Length: 442
Ligand SMILES: *[C@@H]1O[C@H](CO)[C@@H](O)[C@H](O)[C@H]1NC(C)=O
Ligand SMILES: *[C@@H]1O[C@H](CO)[C@@H](O)[C@H](O)[C@H]1NC(C)=O
Ligand SMILES: *[C@@H]1O[C@H](CO)[C@@H](O)[C@H](O)[C@H]1NC(C)=O
Image (cartoon, rainbow, N blue to C red; front, top):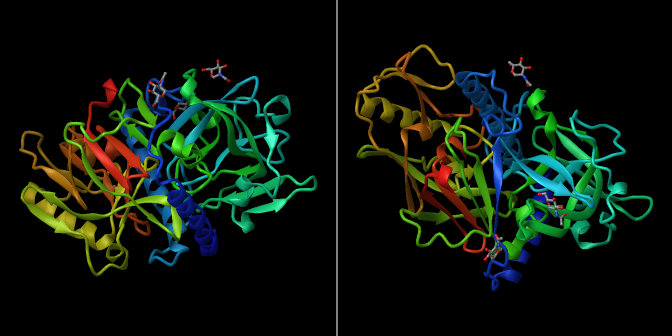
């Protein structure tokens, strides 16, 4: 995707923010399950994989993901080198029903992209999937989108062409060279039996030529597309817009929990929630998809490392992307090195040779006391649990970091660091809030 495209998109989204800024009232609230595909409750669960195997898989996916994001960011000339990830496996999936009569679909929930799309028949090239393809001809409520109408014109002109019968044909590519091409349509989409979760005219891409650079994994064959939750104008969250008060949140349960995580739209105000802290949500006009926060530093015990002023990335306000789709957290290299030195100093640990997750591991004894790790975002100090930042293996007395410096990647706050918090994105209020929560009870 080219920079020009991003300029175009922000024009639209900032326009819509300005137009609707008076409307704050949530008209609908609903909550849906967010299936981590390794959770025992998930339809994707494979009981034969061990938890350390799962973590290793998660770690390798983080590195790919960070590179994938950096590809997008780097096209806007932020300093990052580009590598092509060879594997990208998404983390969370949601279930929805589309059309009349409704057809069940599972799709990747992605805060790092905007379009909602599903693989459709007749298909020229589709990723392998178990359920039959969605056939728009069999849905009495499906309508094609004409090329001159609003949803079509929200796509950049390089992302659309006019079909032979005046229908909107889209082409949407991702940073990792995967893409979807198809017809833009509207249909009834329903996220649960809750009436608040039924939408009569959601715009989505009916993809008939799709290539996902997904590592082929049998558990993923129920996946049929993608639901973009980013900040751009065609994402699910932007389409629901004022109906959900321009607000959504999630609460992620710990790795391997037998409860499901939740995604809430139009959630009630978090102002009075115990322990809640908020930091500005930064949407950059040149790359409007991503949710940026500003990390000022991290403290370990009573010592702190600050993000580098020298780095061009850190200098920019909004130096880390918050993402639900990346397991591990990645930091800019200079900052990472300083942070690791501080961790070693305060914990009094030495680097181990073993690195089962391909991250940094330390020899560590569980009985030692553990200092408080706090992420200092602008205006919000978020106190981490040990498991947000480290994986501890007591057999080996190994403490391995759940953060790394994606060699070429852009800084990302991954979802493991967000487990045990309710994280709310308030686009109207321009802030992200964190509240420590037992997500298994929500
Ligand atoms: C529907 O949304 C409204 C407004 O947010 C809320 O008060 C109500 O409880 C929701 N209904 C259900 C069944 O969730
Ligand atoms: C919504 O989804 C449920 C399944 O949870 C389905 O039975 C129902 O028919 C759907 N409602 C509409 C209006 O499509
Ligand atoms: C589960 O994982 C094992 C080990 O990787 C694999 O051989 C098997 O095919 C998987 N089963 C399913 C249903 O995905």
